[in-house]
Image (cartoon, rainbow, N blue to C red):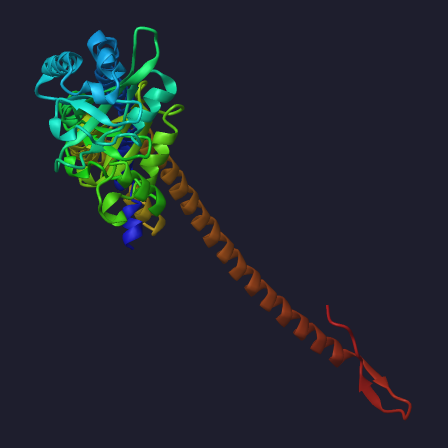
Length: 455
């Protein structure tokens, strides 16, 4: 019964009006949301990649500048002259004073971030250092000494935790020192406070938009600096093997903590870094953004096997879409309300004559042949009502003529029945008269009535 009411003409008109008004609006909203969301995402990715590339360039510039500085400093004659002396002749020599003054002068170039300048002999022993507690220390096994001698080129190390100063992180620059004949006599080593790297990453926060920040990773996916969560520094994206952790801890690249404390579990981000050359964008959830979906752009450095990741929550750059969707929803509700009101009015206007026509036809089919449809308009519905009136009048006339013919047929049937009865009576009387007039004897000579057929 309820379904029957639902499928009334008025309800169908309301549903039709709603469909005509809302379906295009919904389709346009969905298409607009998709295209705008794609545009905003593409723009955000491009902005993030541009800032990530700019950050990587700043780090490359920082590294290149210090490599050039240590390369130029290594050719200063006072350093090579000191290293060219026999070890026993160096102490207290004029060359020692010149070399010491030269190192101190170099360190004054940046008194905040330069930790020390040092000279290492060919055995890797620290023979002169602006940080005097390091003098005499063996630095033979460090990469900045080995690689400088091996390549004869300027070298920059990874970030290292200081074994002597708690909380201090250094980055080392080195270059071979040659005498006047071009023979390598030692290595000039610059120890730089790597806090400058963290500061550089921190300064990039917000450059690509609200809540955007940078992350610096090394070649083992270890966070070297973080724009908003520095507590994640020196933690890898994925768990590292026990052997690798032990090696990196020995090199000062990881603190001496348990393996579980030295990593997070972000294999998708690690895979994205691996594929950065082909696809520098990805979308991922991060704990530092409360597990929101984030857009991430990845840019590699040129002077180191490091990567700069620039991150921004999707909710930030997609906020206009959310606002637009809410506006479209409110608009759809308002339109739906107006459409329902108009549909009810139009349904009443359009459906009422048809409803009256239907009720009139119901009365007519129930036997009331005198009922007629009231014609209230001259449109198609009015023409339909006029047609039904004509049809009903013809049906009434035809029915009345059938009734007259039926009455005549009934009267004829009565007359036929009376005539049949009278004819039967006459046949009976005639047979009796014939039987009385004729007699026939049988084989024994007895008389029998004459048998005759009836008419």
